[in-house]
Image (cartoon, rainbow, N blue to C red; front, side, top):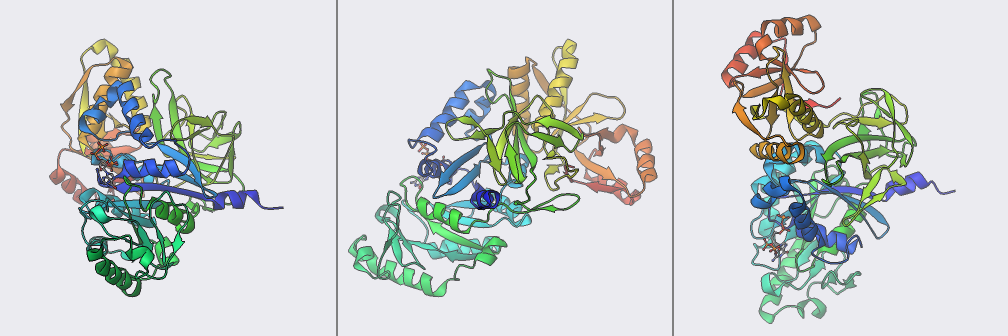
Length: 524
Ligand code: G4P
């Protein structure tokens, strides 16, 4: 009897696209979904984005500033593989959301604008991927426009990212004469993404290739493609999977070139679901018992139904509709009665999801970011990060009668990961913390639109926040007692030290060497 679990897990590919805004992530996503049959017409993803934007008030921010606030997941099948594409917000003010999403993927596609090369945001996101050894496939987009020389781009990736490159395809022409991709190792071409199969040819000098180009560009193509085939590093699957080498594909998401090469590469080379580290053991994806963790919460996706969806990554086994799971944080059981899959155009109840899949679990606040679900085993997945906020504010309520409502609303927003919430030990009003200023705008808009709470923000006397811990509990107590006015508790009740500036942080850290003060907390 075939082992369905191993087979099903083996065909999962869970990935994200990382890029600088405008490099073409949305256009590429759309094409991937189109080939995967998840949407029928090009334009649906963009149209959906627009529709969502007009549907919800707080997303006005997104519309006005041309950024994507919403992280979502899209599942589609192609050539017997099941792809889970996790989208990430493009704007750096939502970096913490993006980092958490990257904890849930096994591979990433790095989209580079062929004219611009590596841009700042790409670099940052790449660094996060490197920290987690996430293998990266590179897609050099917009080859249909004026582009830099492909060797230049490869060079830049190697230099700026300290990452080996292996060009897998070579662009047949560029700019207006871009006519398709040539597969260096396979000696085959694909004229456009309408062709599902590659056409074998007799080397770059074959008439079938050269004939696609204007005469004056043929010699350059033959020379460059031959050089790339001979002189560039060959693809090495192990080096790729370990995050040391990136296979590079050229194309145009808009004009539909090279996207099929990319999706084939994801199926062929990107790893199946990886093992995940928990506090008690490492969990293999093919372990028969279900385990999963929450990396994102989204509330009010549809303002007509005040729903709250926890996005969970299944880490092992099989998640079945109706199953009882154990929530590690509380030790309590919860019923997974209506897990959902997200296709581009609709949500669908998921009867079965396998390791690698990402499903949405509707709940009323039971689940939080970083939570682990199991079939009963007491384990907690490590590594979903919580970043110390860069901006701290007190929320000023215009109507003081609504203080209780505000408290509830802030608690919910904090559980969703929109802001971090800190309750000072001295009983003074709560402090909210964010990584980027736009998150404050989102908080303000949402408090107004969803809870009817007009608020403004006051400067807090603190600007830095650090989680504190010690080997000896007594040391921590002494520190807390002697700094009561500067101590607060986060959502989990863990203590933080609030400093007015870097100087006083350094001063206290020097005086209290036994206290660990950290800027990143992993959810436990
Ligand atoms: P993003 O999600 O990474 O921010 O980028 P998005 O796909 O929205 O693309 C940014 C702009 O670049 C869009 O143009 C898009 O049409 C264009 N684009 C994407 N891929 C390609 C490509 O392969 N070739 C060319 N020539 N252009 C590409 P826009 O004018 O800003 O938006 P729109 O009016 O076309 O929607």
